[in-house]
Amino acid sequence: MRAGIAVVINGQTNMELVAQASNGREAIECYCEHEPDVTLMDLTLPDMSGIEAMIAIRARFPEARVIISSNFAGSVQVKRAMAAGARSYILKNMSPIEVAAAIHKVHAGKKHIPTEVATHLAEHLDEEALSDREIEVLRHVSAGNSDKTIADVLNVSEHTVKGHLKNIRSKLGANDRTHAVMIALRRRLLFM
Image (cartoon, rainbow, N blue to C red; front, top):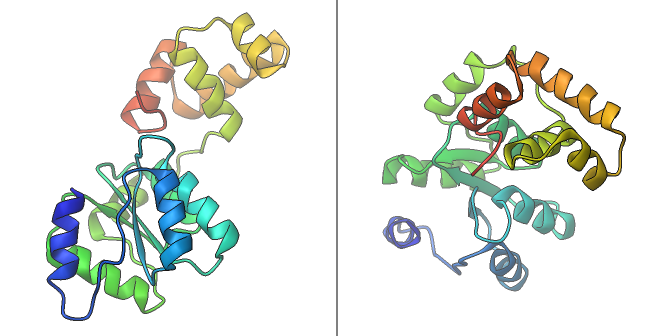
């Protein structure tokens, strides 16, 4: 994937690829060293999410222009990325022309959401988002942990965990905890 993007960028007369990174920590280091005009960041990195790497970069460089690239048009990830400061959210299956256009728009100071991503967002606008804590509880549920174990790990009461699970089921329209995990996986709220 990186090699393909490099070809697209190097094929543009007005763009130059200044660095590549294979994980989030390298991406942060490369950004600090090169301070590129635009950064294309994969959502899923081996050591952290692209959103986490972007947040770390933007903590030191608030004006950093980052485009998140993903296989998923999931509304939750798009909203999280944009709320954290991404200037664009593109899909990996986009054509080289579309990728270059997104980079140009972001470089010009504009935000860019491709039609496919915007359509998916519009379809899920009325869905209530899970809180970070609810996602954390759901991640523990997906690992097969009991309410008591989750409570112990999160240092909260079992009653609090049950309350989170009730809210999660309600927000997702799930019948039970297993159904909630299945919905969360389908919507890309959780990654396995």
